[in-house]
Length: 336
Picture (tube, rainbow, N blue to C red):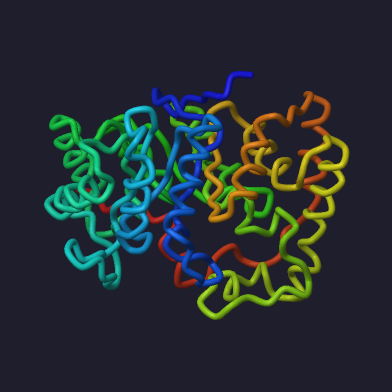
């Protein structure tokens, strides 16, 4: 089985690793650094070549953990990271709002290169669209960084559709990253068709519905203070009870395919388009190995038709993000 996929012209493994929580988990615990390095190494040893970070994760600290972890095999993997939140370049302190001004962006990349222990970023995303900066100005700064060899490909996250078209016209976009899973299927309406039209790859974040689609959450689950799931309405007790229909569906298919719910959820995403590459995050070795097993799950055309129909029949209740976070998605950059 070919375990490689193309995001635009960038070749990556069919499943990537999101390292967002390697400095602090959803549950607010602090993972052991050496164990995070071991997970990164094991992922590589099992054929995973695509690692996803951001300056905002930690902030800064996750890039350091990833840089340390991939150092022995840096030239054999693809590192993706992101700029755009208001993160102090020196201290990593987070301020309000967004910054994608070209001068700041270029300085942010210098910090990323040091933390990641590398001379280039394979895939650099704008983490969220800055409503103060034309996307053409952002593309121009990225183009300058590409000319210096510091950035090889670029992408956007959770952007408005017009902004994606403008960005791609200014400088070809390699990948779009947005939330997408059985629990949130929003990209199917307009984003995926536009990516198909423009030849842009798609990278789903939270492909396991922040753990929900693995079966780890049920009607009795309560979340720790600081866990974002505690303020997402799709995880209120009454909405969880309704949304558990998806978990029941996944469990039935896991039995049918001799797999696990997580593997079915990831394989379903990959089956939607050949240029979709999910990046499940984990801080637990067992979960990493489970996620990697999604590559072995095969759906026949009839399987996929049946499963798609069953997923479509479940109307998920509740919002995917708190309003204060959701407001940053689907934003259009200003015109020049």
